[in-house]
Image 1 (tube, rainbow, N blue to C red):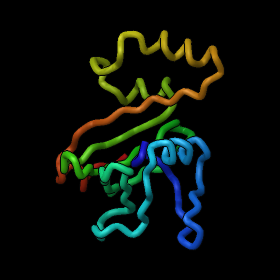
Image 2: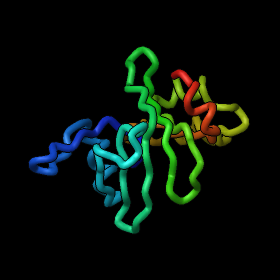
Image 3: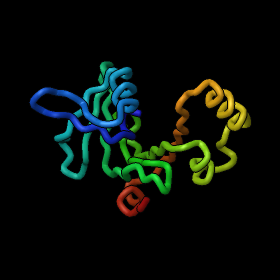
Image 4: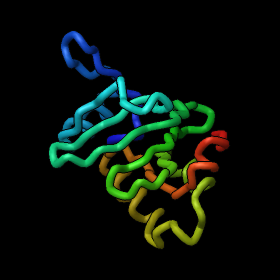
Length: 137
């Protein structure tokens, strides 16, 4: 969740603006946002309180028609590019490999929704640098 968001930092005050849930998750993880990353090809970078760093290279904003957003990011831990996507549980089922969906997916969704929780599904996929440069949404 440190990479897949549309949060913006107001430099003068260090205030984060954006979706309140995204801000809560970002702050909960004790991340800091850097909107001027060292890599000129990057959009932003982030760092955890433990020193874990990540860099986001592509961001595909949330679209209500698609009910999802995604980013392509690289972690300092693995140096591997990943696509991270989040969205409505129903729509994410259309983009995930069926073999990767937990067997109790629908039951858990019903359980959380019945308690009034806002439920998002998160998925990821490794990609190489060539794929990263050529991928479209």
